[in-house]
Amino acid sequence: MILSDRTIKELIDKGDLVVDPFDESQVQCSSLDLRLGDEFVRFKGSGTIDVREGVKDIEKEVVSECIEIGPKEFLLATTVEYIKLPPHITAFVEGRSSLGRLGLFIENAGWVDAGFEGQITLELYNANSVPIRLYVGMRVCQLVFAKLDRTPEKVYSGKYRGQRGVTPSKIEMDRELK
Image (spheres, rainbow, N blue to C red):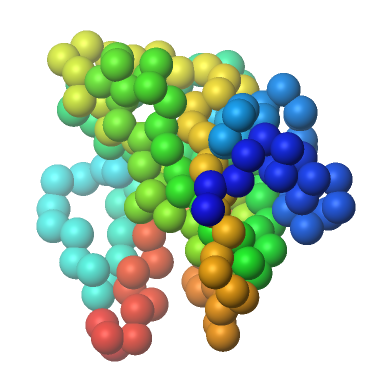
């Protein structure tokens, strides 16, 4: 079941769902808008990324006002908001339609597990043939919350729990790659 604006606000008011900082104007009828943070990661180099070794050639940027994503460029970003989901709520990350219509793909693998807490790392891809300029603090994506049929046996406790700022891939930590 997708949660309505009323339920989202009730969960936040009770402290069951944490959104920090929270601005009630970000609550939509069936989602919560999240804003673009000021930290980004660009991938450098031209070699192969070996998933057993992880990503080494990256450049972190902190900007005060805006960032440009070049044509066919991929970068990581973060949200302003730090969230904490209760064990019975999961969330989907969806890009804003207005940005998608400019050719900006916004993803985070699309899913936030029940029990996750941290800032959301976003994967941004400019599919357009011209640069797109984005501004710190603008609404960039939305969380759509869903209630689980019951509390899971294991809530999220993975390698990205508690992340702050842009967090590059930690795939090299996967047990099957060791």
